[in-house]
Figure 1 (cartoon, rainbow, N blue to C red):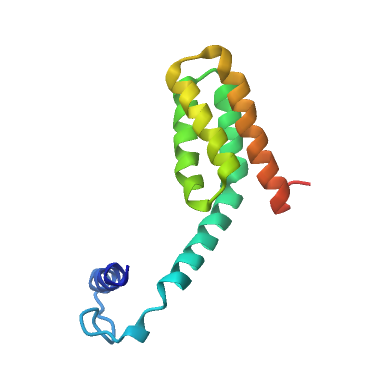
Figure 2: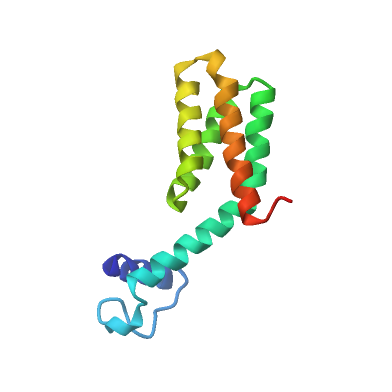
Length: 133
């Protein structure tokens, strides 16, 4: 992880036309925050972003389902699942994976219950976060 951070900071500096005071190759260890701190900060920022965007994702899922646009529903689920799996949300992840499997299987009878389960998981998360009264 430290090597990845070193390369990333060097690439950004070169792209912006600036070199950091200490280049990645010779930067002291204290130049970079501990990996755990970076992971925690990244996780917190990712989770906060997800919570802010979750109402939009939810509405997109509901609109695609109501319009019976299975392709759009699949894209919405895929996009949301891509964000959710990094936030350690097992209930929502499970509901979205189940919906994704139903979409792939073409089981029209299971589509509405799976979509409702995903919607309920989103609603529960929003309620826990305080974003929904």
